[in-house]
Image 1 (cartoon, rainbow, N blue to C red):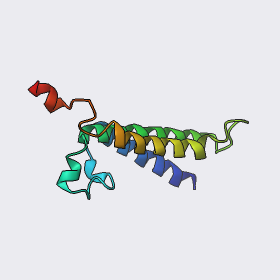
Image 2: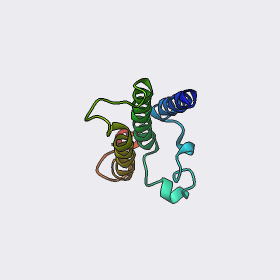
Image 3: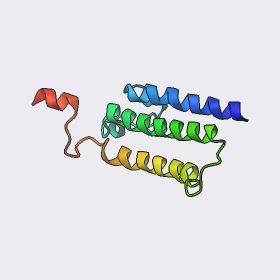
Image 4: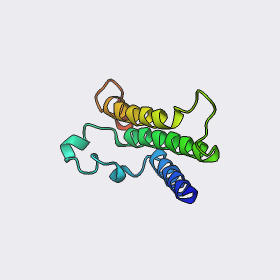
Length: 114
């Protein structure tokens, strides 16, 4: 069981590196199936970096949980279930706010034009 958990943590870490590099948007559910008009509403690199940061946090939390055998000190036993939910909620909120084009922030191409 522990080996499986380590493989999941490693997979999350690899995906985090890919997303933090600004690549792998085709792996994001919803974005890869969106129409070109819908995709134009999002900054792809920023979306990948938000997902990468979230995946990195998930990988770290899972690795810490595995190392401690999910026996956290008193008062910290909420970290794994609620931490995962909070990170996922943060990814969803940031993807729909910070990653939208036209929210007051300029993309790299817009900065070059101005």
